[in-house]
Image (tube, rainbow, N blue to C red; front, side, top):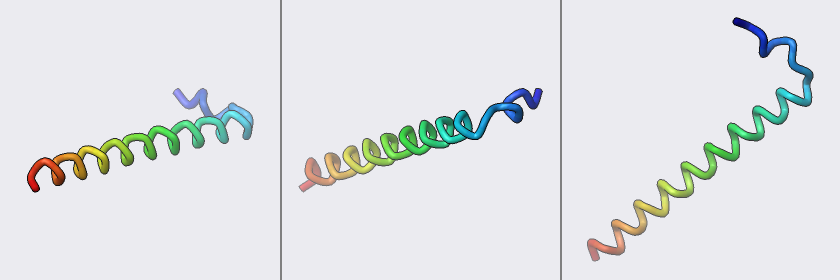
Length: 42
């Protein structure tokens, strides 16, 4: 169950980096969609 706890610090760093990248991509596409809708309404 807690197999991820015996990963090395480097593996933890990679996982954190991937989560951050995914979060940034989702936020960026979300903002682009919002600005796209706003420009369509105008």
